[in-house]
Amino acid sequence: MAEMSLDLSKYVDLFLSEGREHIGELTEALNEMETTPSSDDAVAAAFRAVHSIKGMAAAMGYTVVTERANAMESALDSLRRGESQVTPSLLGHLIDEADELAREIEAAVIQPASETPGESAPRRGASVPPATTESARRTNTHVRVRASRLDALMNLVGEIEIARGRMEREVARIDDDQLSSSFENASRLLHDLRDQVIGARMVPVGQVFERFPRLVRETARSLEKEVDFTLDGADIELDRTILDRIGDPVMHLLRNSLDHGIEAVAERERDGKAVRGRLTLSAQREAGYVLIRVADDGRGINREKVLRRALELDLVDRDATNLDDVALLRVLAHPGFSTASSVTDVSGRGVGLDVVDAAVRILGGTIEIKSVAGRGTAITLRLPLSVAIVRSLVARVGEELFAIPFTHVLETLSLEPPASALRGAAWTTTEISGSQVGIVVLGNLFGVPTRISAQMPGVSVLARGRRAALIVDAFVGQQDVVVKHYDPPREGSPMFSGATVLGDGSPALIVDVNSLI
Image 1: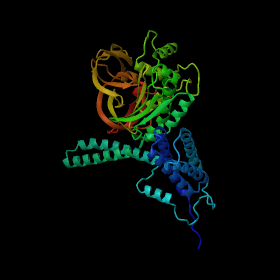
Image 2: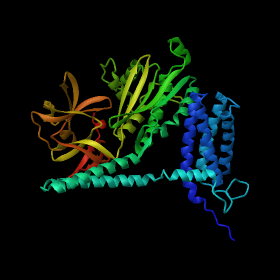
Image 3: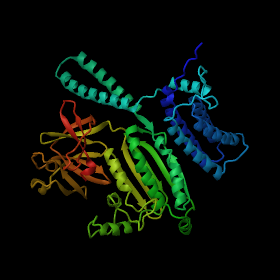
Image 4: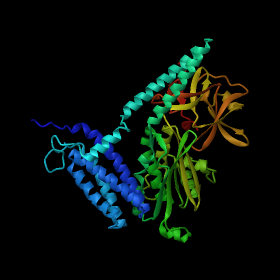
Protein backbone atom coordinates (compact mmCIF):
# COMPACT_ATOMS: atom_id res chain seq x y z
CA MET A 1 0.00 0.00 0.00
CA ALA A 2 1.29 3.46 -0.90
CA GLU A 3 2.31 5.57 2.07
CA MET A 4 0.28 8.71 2.80
CA SER A 5 2.23 11.95 2.27
CA LEU A 6 2.30 14.21 5.31
CA ASP A 7 2.14 17.89 4.26
CA LEU A 8 3.91 19.82 7.03
CA SER A 9 3.72 23.21 5.28
CA LYS A 10 0.21 23.87 6.57
CA TYR A 11 1.55 23.70 10.15
CA VAL A 12 4.24 26.35 9.65
CA ASP A 13 2.10 29.26 10.85
CA LEU A 14 1.01 27.28 13.90
CA PHE A 15 4.62 26.39 14.69
CA LEU A 16 5.72 30.02 14.41
CA SER A 17 2.84 31.32 16.51
CA GLU A 18 3.25 28.74 19.29
CA GLY A 19 7.03 29.03 19.12
CA ARG A 20 6.80 32.76 19.82
CA GLU A 21 4.46 32.10 22.74
CA HIS A 22 6.87 29.60 24.27
CA ILE A 23 9.82 31.97 23.76
CA GLY A 24 7.82 34.57 25.68
CA GLU A 25 7.24 32.07 28.50
CA LEU A 26 10.93 31.13 28.47
CA THR A 27 12.02 34.78 28.62
CA GLU A 28 9.69 35.49 31.52
CA ALA A 29 10.97 32.45 33.41
CA LEU A 30 14.63 33.41 32.85
CA ASN A 31 13.87 36.93 34.08
CA GLU A 32 12.41 35.45 37.26
CA MET A 33 15.44 33.20 37.66
CA GLU A 34 17.64 36.29 37.48
CA THR A 35 15.76 38.08 40.26
CA THR A 36 15.06 34.95 42.31
CA PRO A 37 17.75 32.33 41.58
CA SER A 38 16.21 29.90 44.08
CA SER A 39 12.82 29.84 42.33
CA ASP A 40 12.02 26.23 41.45
CA ASP A 41 8.84 27.36 39.69
CA ALA A 42 10.83 29.57 37.32
CA VAL A 43 13.20 26.73 36.45
CA ALA A 44 10.25 24.40 35.86
CA ALA A 45 8.50 26.97 33.66
CA ALA A 46 11.65 27.48 31.57
CA PHE A 47 12.06 23.71 31.21
CA ARG A 48 8.45 23.28 30.05
CA ALA A 49 8.78 26.05 27.46
CA VAL A 50 11.99 24.62 26.00
CA HIS A 51 10.60 21.08 26.06
CA SER A 52 7.54 22.23 24.10
CA ILE A 53 9.70 24.01 21.54
CA LYS A 54 11.86 20.91 21.12
CA GLY A 55 8.84 18.70 20.54
CA MET A 56 7.30 21.11 18.01
CA ALA A 57 10.59 21.56 16.12
CA ALA A 58 11.21 17.81 16.00
CA ALA A 59 7.72 17.25 14.63
CA MET A 60 8.37 19.81 11.89
CA GLY A 61 11.85 18.51 11.07
CA TYR A 62 13.65 21.69 12.15
CA THR A 63 16.89 20.03 13.21
CA VAL A 64 18.85 23.12 14.28
CA VAL A 65 16.05 24.33 16.53
CA THR A 66 15.60 20.85 17.95
CA GLU A 67 19.28 20.47 18.83
CA ARG A 68 19.56 23.86 20.51
CA ALA A 69 16.37 23.30 22.47
CA ASN A 70 17.63 19.86 23.50
CA ALA A 71 20.87 21.33 24.85
CA MET A 72 18.96 23.97 26.82
CA GLU A 73 16.55 21.35 28.11
CA SER A 74 19.48 19.29 29.46
CA ALA A 75 20.92 22.30 31.31
CA LEU A 76 17.53 23.20 32.78
CA ASP A 77 16.84 19.60 33.72
CA SER A 78 20.09 19.58 35.69
CA LEU A 79 18.90 22.66 37.57
CA ARG A 80 15.48 21.14 38.06
CA ARG A 81 16.98 18.00 39.61
CA GLY A 82 19.26 20.03 41.90
CA GLU A 83 22.42 18.71 40.22
CA SER A 84 23.61 22.26 39.50
CA GLN A 85 22.93 25.78 40.74
CA VAL A 86 21.83 29.00 39.06
CA THR A 87 24.96 31.12 38.67
CA PRO A 88 25.37 34.44 36.82
CA SER A 89 27.51 32.78 34.15
CA LEU A 90 25.03 29.93 33.60
CA LEU A 91 22.09 32.31 33.53
CA GLY A 92 23.88 34.54 31.04
CA HIS A 93 24.54 31.50 28.87
CA LEU A 94 20.87 30.43 29.03
CA ILE A 95 19.72 33.94 28.11
CA ASP A 96 22.07 34.01 25.12
CA GLU A 97 20.86 30.57 24.07
CA ALA A 98 17.24 31.71 24.39
CA ASP A 99 17.98 34.63 22.07
CA GLU A 100 19.57 32.30 19.55
CA LEU A 101 16.63 29.91 19.85
CA ALA A 102 14.19 32.74 19.15
CA ARG A 103 16.15 33.76 16.05
CA GLU A 104 16.35 30.18 14.80
CA ILE A 105 12.60 29.73 15.19
CA GLU A 106 12.06 32.80 12.91
CA ALA A 107 14.63 31.57 10.37
CA ALA A 108 13.53 27.92 10.43
CA VAL A 109 10.13 28.59 8.84
CA ILE A 110 11.69 29.77 5.58
CA GLN A 111 13.51 26.43 5.20
CA PRO A 112 11.69 23.35 3.96
CA ALA A 113 10.84 20.92 6.74
CA SER A 114 13.22 17.97 6.53
CA GLU A 115 11.86 14.53 5.84
CA THR A 116 15.26 12.85 5.79
CA PRO A 117 15.54 9.92 8.21
CA GLY A 118 17.74 10.72 11.15
CA GLU A 119 16.85 14.44 11.22
CA SER A 120 14.03 14.09 13.73
CA ALA A 121 11.35 14.60 11.08
CA PRO A 122 8.23 12.45 11.30
CA ARG A 123 8.28 9.57 8.83
CA ARG A 124 5.58 9.34 6.21
CA GLY A 125 2.57 7.81 7.76
CA ALA A 126 3.98 8.30 11.28
CA SER A 127 1.64 9.12 14.12
CA VAL A 128 1.52 12.63 15.53
CA PRO A 129 4.06 13.14 18.37
CA PRO A 130 2.83 13.95 21.89
CA ALA A 131 3.94 17.62 21.66
CA THR A 132 1.77 18.12 18.58
CA THR A 133 -1.17 16.41 20.31
CA GLU A 134 -0.78 18.84 23.22
CA SER A 135 -0.79 21.75 20.75
CA ALA A 136 -3.94 20.41 19.17
CA ARG A 137 -5.65 20.27 22.56
CA ARG A 138 -4.76 23.90 23.19
CA THR A 139 -6.22 24.97 19.84
CA ASN A 140 -9.58 23.70 21.03
CA THR A 141 -9.72 26.61 23.47
CA HIS A 142 -7.56 29.20 21.68
CA VAL A 143 -8.31 30.20 18.11
CA ARG A 144 -5.68 32.22 16.25
CA VAL A 145 -7.13 34.97 14.09
CA ARG A 146 -5.22 37.18 11.69
CA ALA A 147 -4.90 40.76 12.93
CA SER A 148 -6.28 42.03 9.62
CA ARG A 149 -9.54 40.16 10.29
CA LEU A 150 -9.88 41.77 13.70
CA ASP A 151 -9.26 45.16 12.09
CA ALA A 152 -11.94 44.48 9.48
CA LEU A 153 -14.35 43.33 12.19
CA MET A 154 -13.66 46.50 14.17
CA ASN A 155 -14.37 48.60 11.08
CA LEU A 156 -17.67 46.81 10.59
CA VAL A 157 -18.63 47.41 14.22
CA GLY A 158 -17.81 51.07 13.67
CA GLU A 159 -20.07 51.26 10.64
CA ILE A 160 -22.86 49.58 12.61
CA GLU A 161 -22.38 52.18 15.35
CA ILE A 162 -22.84 54.94 12.80
CA ALA A 163 -25.95 53.24 11.39
CA ARG A 164 -27.32 52.81 14.92
CA GLY A 165 -26.93 56.53 15.53
CA ARG A 166 -28.88 57.36 12.41
CA MET A 167 -31.57 54.86 13.32
CA GLU A 168 -31.82 56.38 16.80
CA ARG A 169 -32.81 59.72 15.29
CA GLU A 170 -35.50 58.08 13.19
CA VAL A 171 -36.89 56.02 16.10
CA ALA A 172 -37.10 59.18 18.21
CA ARG A 173 -39.53 60.65 15.67
CA ILE A 174 -41.92 57.72 15.98
CA ASP A 175 -44.17 57.44 19.02
CA ASP A 176 -44.05 53.67 19.39
CA ASP A 177 -43.09 52.16 22.73
CA GLN A 178 -42.56 48.68 21.31
CA LEU A 179 -40.25 49.99 18.58
CA SER A 180 -38.30 52.03 21.12
CA SER A 181 -37.93 49.01 23.40
CA SER A 182 -36.70 46.85 20.51
CA PHE A 183 -34.23 49.53 19.48
CA GLU A 184 -32.86 49.80 23.03
CA ASN A 185 -32.35 46.02 23.16
CA ALA A 186 -30.56 46.08 19.81
CA SER A 187 -28.39 48.98 20.98
CA ARG A 188 -27.44 47.11 24.13
CA LEU A 189 -26.45 44.05 22.11
CA LEU A 190 -24.42 46.22 19.77
CA HIS A 191 -22.54 47.75 22.70
CA ASP A 192 -21.83 44.25 24.02
CA LEU A 193 -20.59 43.19 20.58
CA ARG A 194 -18.36 46.25 20.38
CA ASP A 195 -16.89 45.53 23.80
CA GLN A 196 -16.20 41.92 22.80
CA VAL A 197 -14.46 42.96 19.58
CA ILE A 198 -12.36 45.53 21.40
CA GLY A 199 -11.55 42.87 24.00
CA ALA A 200 -10.41 40.49 21.27
CA ARG A 201 -7.89 43.11 20.13
CA MET A 202 -6.45 43.48 23.63
CA VAL A 203 -3.14 41.84 24.50
CA PRO A 204 -1.03 41.93 27.70
CA VAL A 205 1.65 44.61 27.78
CA GLY A 206 3.99 41.86 28.94
CA GLN A 207 4.35 40.87 25.31
CA VAL A 208 6.38 44.06 24.86
CA PHE A 209 7.78 44.35 28.40
CA GLU A 210 9.39 40.90 28.41
CA ARG A 211 12.20 41.98 26.09
CA PHE A 212 13.35 44.87 28.27
CA PRO A 213 15.14 43.07 31.14
CA ARG A 214 17.90 42.06 28.77
CA LEU A 215 18.09 45.59 27.33
CA VAL A 216 18.39 47.04 30.83
CA ARG A 217 21.01 44.49 31.88
CA GLU A 218 23.21 45.03 28.82
CA THR A 219 22.88 48.83 28.88
CA ALA A 220 23.70 48.94 32.60
CA ARG A 221 26.73 46.72 31.97
CA SER A 222 27.97 48.99 29.17
CA LEU A 223 27.58 52.01 31.48
CA GLU A 224 29.25 50.12 34.36
CA LYS A 225 26.24 50.67 36.61
CA GLU A 226 24.43 48.30 38.95
CA VAL A 227 20.65 48.29 38.61
CA ASP A 228 17.72 46.28 39.94
CA PHE A 229 14.99 46.25 37.30
CA THR A 230 11.37 45.56 38.22
CA LEU A 231 8.37 44.86 35.97
CA ASP A 232 4.88 45.48 37.32
CA GLY A 233 1.49 45.00 35.70
CA ALA A 234 2.63 42.87 32.77
CA ASP A 235 -0.86 41.34 32.60
CA ILE A 236 -2.55 44.71 31.98
CA GLU A 237 -4.08 44.67 28.49
CA LEU A 238 -3.92 47.24 25.69
CA ASP A 239 -5.20 47.40 22.15
CA ARG A 240 -2.59 45.61 20.04
CA THR A 241 -2.32 48.67 17.74
CA ILE A 242 -1.21 50.77 20.69
CA LEU A 243 1.03 48.05 22.06
CA ASP A 244 2.83 47.69 18.73
CA ARG A 245 3.72 51.39 18.84
CA ILE A 246 4.90 51.86 22.43
CA GLY A 247 7.87 49.49 22.32
CA ASP A 248 10.38 52.03 20.99
CA PRO A 249 9.15 54.90 23.20
CA VAL A 250 9.47 52.77 26.33
CA MET A 251 12.92 51.62 25.20
CA HIS A 252 14.02 55.28 24.90
CA LEU A 253 12.73 56.04 28.39
CA LEU A 254 14.57 53.08 29.91
CA ARG A 255 17.84 53.97 28.19
CA ASN A 256 17.56 57.60 29.27
CA SER A 257 16.92 56.55 32.87
CA LEU A 258 19.99 54.32 32.83
CA ASP A 259 22.23 56.91 31.21
CA HIS A 260 21.01 60.19 32.73
CA GLY A 261 19.16 59.05 35.86
CA ILE A 262 20.84 56.15 37.65
CA GLU A 263 24.20 57.21 39.06
CA ALA A 264 27.47 55.31 38.94
CA VAL A 265 28.30 53.17 41.97
CA ALA A 266 30.86 55.64 43.36
CA GLU A 267 28.45 58.56 43.11
CA ARG A 268 25.65 56.65 44.83
CA GLU A 269 28.00 55.62 47.65
CA ARG A 270 29.14 59.21 48.07
CA ASP A 271 25.52 60.40 48.33
CA GLY A 272 24.64 57.70 50.86
CA LYS A 273 22.43 55.74 48.46
CA ALA A 274 22.20 51.99 47.95
CA VAL A 275 24.88 50.85 45.53
CA ARG A 276 22.32 49.29 43.20
CA GLY A 277 19.93 51.70 41.55
CA ARG A 278 16.24 50.93 41.16
CA LEU A 279 14.47 51.12 37.81
CA THR A 280 10.80 50.22 37.45
CA LEU A 281 8.60 49.74 34.41
CA SER A 282 4.95 49.45 35.35
CA ALA A 283 1.48 49.41 33.86
CA GLN A 284 -1.82 50.08 35.60
CA ARG A 285 -5.43 50.75 34.72
CA GLU A 286 -7.02 54.07 35.59
CA ALA A 287 -10.62 54.60 34.48
CA GLY A 288 -10.58 54.23 30.68
CA TYR A 289 -6.82 54.52 30.33
CA VAL A 290 -3.62 52.60 30.87
CA LEU A 291 -0.69 54.30 32.58
CA ILE A 292 2.78 53.16 31.49
CA ARG A 293 5.38 54.50 33.91
CA VAL A 294 9.19 54.41 33.90
CA ALA A 295 10.62 55.46 37.27
CA ASP A 296 14.12 55.49 38.72
CA ASP A 297 15.71 56.48 42.04
CA GLY A 298 18.57 58.32 40.36
CA ARG A 299 19.88 61.86 40.55
CA GLY A 300 16.82 63.48 39.01
CA ILE A 301 16.87 65.92 36.12
CA ASN A 302 19.26 68.83 36.42
CA ARG A 303 16.81 71.65 35.77
CA GLU A 304 19.50 74.34 35.81
CA LYS A 305 21.49 72.55 33.13
CA VAL A 306 18.36 72.00 31.03
CA LEU A 307 17.41 75.68 31.46
CA ARG A 308 20.85 76.88 30.34
CA ARG A 309 20.66 74.71 27.24
CA ALA A 310 17.06 75.81 26.58
CA LEU A 311 18.14 79.46 26.77
CA GLU A 312 20.95 78.78 24.29
CA LEU A 313 18.44 77.26 21.87
CA ASP A 314 15.87 80.01 22.53
CA LEU A 315 13.28 77.48 23.70
CA VAL A 316 12.14 79.51 26.72
CA ASP A 317 11.66 83.18 27.54
CA ARG A 318 14.93 85.03 28.13
CA ASP A 319 13.80 86.06 31.61
CA ALA A 320 12.99 82.46 32.68
CA THR A 321 14.73 81.54 35.92
CA ASN A 322 13.37 78.04 36.54
CA LEU A 323 11.49 75.20 34.88
CA ASP A 324 8.46 73.57 36.45
CA ASP A 325 7.44 70.04 35.41
CA VAL A 326 5.29 71.34 32.55
CA ALA A 327 8.01 73.58 31.11
CA LEU A 328 10.60 70.87 31.70
CA LEU A 329 8.60 68.39 29.64
CA ARG A 330 8.09 70.91 26.85
CA VAL A 331 11.83 71.56 26.61
CA LEU A 332 12.92 67.93 26.86
CA ALA A 333 10.39 66.92 24.20
CA HIS A 334 11.73 69.46 21.72
CA PRO A 335 13.14 67.61 18.67
CA GLY A 336 16.92 67.26 18.88
CA PHE A 337 17.23 68.61 22.42
CA SER A 338 20.10 67.11 24.42
CA THR A 339 22.35 68.22 27.25
CA ALA A 340 24.91 65.47 26.61
CA SER A 341 28.38 66.87 25.94
CA SER A 342 29.39 63.87 23.84
CA VAL A 343 27.80 61.17 21.74
CA THR A 344 27.83 57.61 23.12
CA ASP A 345 26.19 54.35 22.16
CA VAL A 346 23.39 55.21 24.59
CA SER A 347 22.71 58.93 24.24
CA GLY A 348 23.88 62.32 23.07
CA ARG A 349 22.29 62.27 19.62
CA GLY A 350 19.22 64.26 20.68
CA VAL A 351 16.93 61.28 20.22
CA GLY A 352 14.78 60.50 23.21
CA LEU A 353 11.77 62.19 24.71
CA ASP A 354 10.78 63.82 21.41
CA VAL A 355 10.36 60.34 19.94
CA VAL A 356 8.21 59.35 22.91
CA ASP A 357 6.16 62.53 22.69
CA ALA A 358 5.47 62.08 18.97
CA ALA A 359 4.43 58.45 19.38
CA VAL A 360 2.13 59.16 22.31
CA ARG A 361 0.51 62.09 20.53
CA ILE A 362 -0.32 59.92 17.53
CA LEU A 363 -2.05 57.48 19.87
CA GLY A 364 -4.09 60.26 21.48
CA GLY A 365 -2.27 59.98 24.79
CA THR A 366 -0.42 62.36 27.07
CA ILE A 367 2.89 62.44 28.95
CA GLU A 368 3.57 63.55 32.51
CA ILE A 369 6.95 64.03 34.15
CA LYS A 370 7.90 64.26 37.82
CA SER A 371 11.49 64.76 38.86
CA VAL A 372 13.03 65.48 42.27
CA ALA A 373 16.71 66.31 42.59
CA GLY A 374 18.60 63.49 44.25
CA ARG A 375 15.54 61.24 44.45
CA GLY A 376 14.72 60.28 40.87
CA THR A 377 12.44 60.78 37.92
CA ALA A 378 9.15 59.25 36.82
CA ILE A 379 7.71 59.63 33.33
CA THR A 380 4.14 58.46 32.80
CA LEU A 381 2.43 57.73 29.50
CA ARG A 382 -1.36 57.98 29.72
CA LEU A 383 -2.76 55.91 26.85
CA PRO A 384 -6.33 55.17 25.73
CA LEU A 385 -7.39 51.53 25.86
CA SER A 386 -8.26 51.61 22.18
CA VAL A 387 -7.65 53.87 19.20
CA ALA A 388 -10.53 52.43 17.19
CA ILE A 389 -13.41 53.99 19.15
CA VAL A 390 -12.83 57.09 21.26
CA ARG A 391 -15.17 58.71 23.76
CA SER A 392 -15.38 62.37 22.73
CA LEU A 393 -17.03 65.68 23.44
CA VAL A 394 -18.68 66.89 20.23
CA ALA A 395 -18.67 70.66 19.74
CA ARG A 396 -19.96 73.00 17.05
CA VAL A 397 -17.84 75.81 15.66
CA GLY A 398 -19.72 77.88 13.12
CA GLU A 399 -21.47 75.30 10.96
CA GLU A 400 -18.78 72.64 11.49
CA LEU A 401 -18.61 69.83 14.05
CA PHE A 402 -15.47 68.74 15.90
CA ALA A 403 -14.77 65.87 18.31
CA ILE A 404 -12.53 66.52 21.32
CA PRO A 405 -11.25 63.22 22.85
CA PHE A 406 -12.09 62.77 26.52
CA THR A 407 -8.46 61.78 27.08
CA HIS A 408 -7.74 65.51 27.38
CA VAL A 409 -11.01 66.92 28.75
CA LEU A 410 -11.03 68.23 32.33
CA GLU A 411 -14.31 70.19 32.48
CA THR A 412 -16.66 72.41 30.51
CA LEU A 413 -17.07 76.05 31.44
CA SER A 414 -18.35 79.44 30.31
CA LEU A 415 -15.73 82.00 29.31
CA GLU A 416 -15.53 85.65 28.43
CA PRO A 417 -13.39 85.75 25.27
CA PRO A 418 -10.41 88.13 25.43
CA ALA A 419 -10.64 91.32 23.39
CA SER A 420 -8.00 89.96 21.01
CA ALA A 421 -10.47 87.25 19.95
CA LEU A 422 -12.60 89.93 18.35
CA ARG A 423 -9.61 90.85 16.20
CA GLY A 424 -9.27 87.29 14.97
CA ALA A 425 -6.55 86.07 17.34
CA ALA A 426 -6.50 82.30 17.78
CA TRP A 427 -4.17 82.06 20.80
CA THR A 428 -4.17 84.23 23.89
CA THR A 429 -4.24 83.91 27.67
CA THR A 430 -6.70 84.71 30.44
CA GLU A 431 -6.95 84.26 34.17
CA ILE A 432 -8.96 81.30 35.48
CA SER A 433 -9.14 80.62 39.21
CA GLY A 434 -6.17 82.86 39.82
CA SER A 435 -3.93 81.24 37.22
CA GLN A 436 -2.96 82.31 33.72
CA VAL A 437 -4.35 79.78 31.26
CA GLY A 438 -3.88 79.58 27.53
CA ILE A 439 -6.98 80.23 25.41
CA VAL A 440 -7.52 78.78 21.95
CA VAL A 441 -10.42 80.23 19.93
CA LEU A 442 -11.14 77.30 17.61
CA GLY A 443 -13.20 79.36 15.16
CA ASN A 444 -10.31 81.75 14.56
CA LEU A 445 -7.77 78.93 14.52
CA PHE A 446 -9.63 76.78 12.01
CA GLY A 447 -10.75 79.72 9.87
CA VAL A 448 -14.41 78.88 10.49
CA PRO A 449 -16.86 81.83 10.60
CA THR A 450 -17.96 82.27 14.21
CA ARG A 451 -19.60 85.04 16.21
CA ILE A 452 -17.78 86.16 19.34
CA SER A 453 -20.20 86.93 22.17
CA ALA A 454 -19.84 88.12 25.78
CA GLN A 455 -19.94 84.58 27.17
CA MET A 456 -19.00 81.50 25.16
CA PRO A 457 -18.79 77.77 25.90
CA GLY A 458 -15.34 76.48 26.62
CA VAL A 459 -13.68 73.22 27.54
CA SER A 460 -10.70 72.95 29.85
CA VAL A 461 -8.15 70.48 28.48
CA LEU A 462 -4.81 69.04 29.55
CA ALA A 463 -2.11 67.98 27.12
CA ARG A 464 1.67 67.61 27.32
CA GLY A 465 1.46 68.67 30.95
CA ARG A 466 -0.17 72.01 30.11
CA ARG A 467 -3.70 73.21 30.78
CA ALA A 468 -5.64 75.34 28.31
CA ALA A 469 -9.21 76.26 27.40
CA LEU A 470 -10.74 75.76 23.96
CA ILE A 471 -13.55 78.18 23.03
CA VAL A 472 -16.35 76.80 20.84
CA ASP A 473 -19.79 77.97 19.73
CA ALA A 474 -21.81 75.20 21.35
CA PHE A 475 -21.62 71.70 22.74
CA VAL A 476 -23.56 69.00 20.92
CA GLY A 477 -22.98 66.23 23.46
CA GLN A 478 -20.85 63.20 24.30
CA GLN A 479 -20.41 60.35 21.87
CA ASP A 480 -18.26 57.31 21.14
CA VAL A 481 -16.76 58.15 17.77
CA VAL A 482 -15.29 55.69 15.30
CA VAL A 483 -11.85 56.92 14.29
CA LYS A 484 -11.25 57.04 10.56
CA HIS A 485 -7.86 57.67 8.95
CA TYR A 486 -7.26 61.30 8.05
CA ASP A 487 -4.67 62.68 5.62
CA PRO A 488 -4.14 66.39 6.40
CA PRO A 489 -3.04 68.77 3.63
CA ARG A 490 0.73 68.81 3.30
CA GLU A 491 0.91 72.54 3.83
CA GLY A 492 -1.41 72.46 6.84
CA SER A 493 -0.50 72.02 10.49
CA PRO A 494 -1.41 68.68 12.14
CA MET A 495 -4.40 69.99 14.11
CA PHE A 496 -6.50 66.86 13.60
CA SER A 497 -5.76 63.24 14.47
CA GLY A 498 -8.57 61.66 12.49
CA ALA A 499 -12.09 61.98 11.20
CA THR A 500 -15.41 60.40 12.04
CA VAL A 501 -19.05 60.20 11.01
CA LEU A 502 -21.53 61.06 13.75
CA GLY A 503 -24.80 59.30 14.45
CA ASP A 504 -26.80 61.67 12.26
CA GLY A 505 -24.44 61.11 9.33
CA SER A 506 -22.60 64.40 9.82
CA PRO A 507 -18.83 64.32 9.32
CA ALA A 508 -16.55 65.65 12.06
CA LEU A 509 -12.82 66.09 12.49
CA ILE A 510 -11.15 64.79 15.64
CA VAL A 511 -9.10 67.54 17.26
CA ASP A 512 -5.46 66.76 18.10
CA VAL A 513 -5.34 68.67 21.37
CA ASN A 514 -1.61 67.95 21.76
CA SER A 515 -0.84 70.06 18.70
CA LEU A 516 -2.84 73.06 19.90
CA ILE A 517 -1.19 73.84 23.24
